[in-house]
Amino acid sequence: MEENKINVGGQAIIEGVMMRSPHSLAIACRRQNGDIVVTERVWESLWEKFTFLRWPFLRGVIVLIESLMNGIQALMFSANQALIEPEEKIEGETDENSDAKVTEPEEEQMSKLMIAGTIAFSLGFAFLIFKGIPHMLASVIGLSTDNFLFHLLDGVIKISMFIGYVLLISRMEDIRRVFQYHGAEHKSIFVYENGEELTVENARKYTTLHPRCGTSFIIIVLLSSILVFMVVFPFLPEFHPNRWINALIQVAVKLPLMMPIAGVSYEFLKWSSKHMDNPIIRTLVQPGLWLQLITTKEPDDEQLEVALISLKKSLWREKVGTDTLNEKKAELEIYSGMQDVSF
Image (cartoon, rainbow, N blue to C red; front, side, top):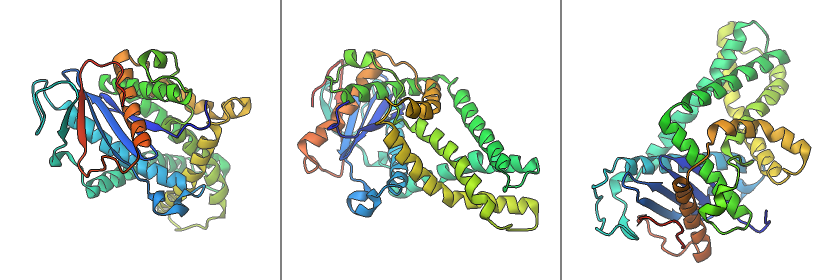
């Protein structure tokens, strides 16, 4: 892996892939008629304006929030494209199938308020399911939070619930295709990180398991939280004499603790991905790679094509600079029957 490569990450979406480089966010997805629709825009992280947010253990929280925001935007874009019938045209689209450029309609743009609301709801729901319920179930046993066995049981329950949830949704055909695009995203990034030409042929040979994957990050967060709660909770006072009210308050206390846990987990993920040749480090990150056996599937060539186009488009911005084509409205580029597109 070349050290001078810029950091690129992505996310699988409905029939497509979102890729993000330091200054670009690109989305590519395939419509029902086989055309690949691409949109790309300048991306600027919060830490570009507030440099202190780049500090270790702070940047992980920012990356998490921004990734959620980007992911929701990308999912909404891909959902809109999936609803377009094969013969349907969106406003401004030309009759040409190849290299057509159209303006993205205003009604398809999600407001910042909507995105913030969706993120807040998603985080709240996830916290309730994977933090609140396990804590309350562990409380039923009657163990005190001063006992490390409580947090061990709590951790086993929440990890089991998460893995069970992933296994359950992986049986859905639509989710399976998203997991295939997830695999395509990883293979494409491997090609770039190894300095090879971004082609479908080169991407085929790589594994779908990537050490910097968000799936691995979630596992690290879950495991780290067990250790943090074991250390912190013995020092907390009893908040209420009623056992169940006290347990609910303890659940609420866990919420702010998730921020430093996310920060530490991000630093470990970032550091460990650069030391995968060390057998001890590889053993520590192995649970995340195992879980990726569920969340990634082997993609076909058409899915690899979409992921590579998204990656190329995000890298294109890094070459031409952030001041080029920096319009508020994104343009859609439509490609038909093209295996290798250069930007």
